[in-house]
Image 1 (cartoon, rainbow, N blue to C red):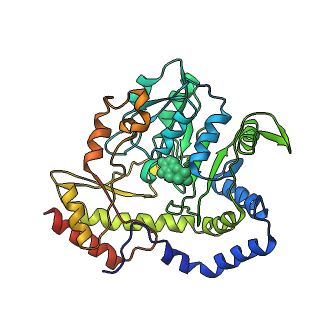
Image 2 (cartoon, helix red, strand yellow; image 1 turned 90 degrees about the vertical axis):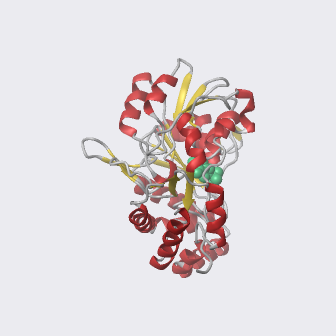
Image 3 (tube, helix red, strand yellow; image 1 turned 120 degrees about the horizontal axis):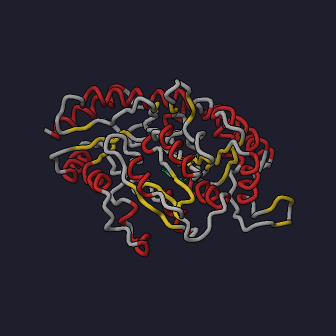
Length: 375
Ligand SMILES: *Cc1c(COP(=O)(O)O)cnc(C)c1O
C-alpha cells in the first residue's frame, strides 16, 4: 500500500485543480490581495451555508477564538469554562487574555463537554463557556443552551473541527454547528474539514452589534480608517485563500459525506472486537468525522503505533497531553485537577487516517492490518 496519509490533500486538489488554479490566478491578476471581492463573497456564501447573519473571516482559528473573547469584553480574571480535552488553541487564547480557564471533564462516549460538570463549574465569575465540537461531533447544545441561558452566560462555539455538522433539537429543528452560540469560531487550517491552502479562520454571529465589534477588533479596533476606538488586532483572511475556500465550500457537504462513509467502513470492520471502542454517534449530532478516533483497551498503544507505522499505516494521538497538564498553564495549577475521563482518554485514544479520498482498498488494508495487530 503506497503513501497512506492521515489527510490526503493532493488527491482532493487534483479533482478541482482547474477551478482552483483559475481562481488563484484571477486573484493575482486582480492584485486585490487583501479584502478583495473574494473575501466579501466568501463571507456571504459561508453565512448563507451556516444560516447565520454575519461571518467575519480572519487569519486563523486561534485568532477567531481570541477575537470572540475580546469582542465579548471579557476582563482579566473572568472565568471561561471549557474542556481540557481539546486542541491547545481553545485554552491558549483564554490564558493569553489573562482570563482564567476552568476545565470540566468530557463524556467518554462523545469526547465532548460533560454538562453536569459544567453546571458545577459555574460561578458568579463565569463570563463565557466554550464548548468544543471535537472530532466533528456536535456538543449536546439544547441542554447546554438552557444552562447558559439560566445563568446568562455567552457561549462561544469552537467549531474548528466540525464545520458542516448539524445539531438536531428535540422538536426536530436542525442547526449548523457554530450557529447556536452567541458566537461561533472556525479554522480553515488545510487539514480541517473546510481547509484552505494556508491559514484561515472565521467568526460567526447573528448579533448585529456584536458583529460590528468583532469586525473592529479584527481590524486594529477601528471603525473609520485611522480612528482606533479599542485595542484590537490585525487578523485577515487573504483573498487567495478566500477564492480557494469559495470553491471548496461548494464541496463541503460532499466532503462530509465522504468522511462519514470512511467512518462507516471502519465502524463495521471494528464493531465486534472487544478491545476496540468505535466512535459513538450521538443521535442529535450529524457527525462529520474530522477525526476517526478509537479507544483501545488492554493494548500497548505505543507498540501498536510502531507496528502500524512498519506497515505504512499512519496513526495519531489527539492529544497526548491534555491542556490542563500542559506546562503553559502551570500558573493555574490545573495539572492535578480531577478530570478522570480526560486522563483516561489520553491513554487509550488513537486516530486513524480519515479524509475525503480514502478508497475501499485503502480502508480495507488499514482495517485488516489493525485487527491483525490488535489480536
Ligand atoms: C485547529 C483548531 C483550532 C485552531 O485553529 P488554527 O487555524 O490552527 O489556529 C482551535 N480549536 C480547535 C479545536 C482546533 O482543532
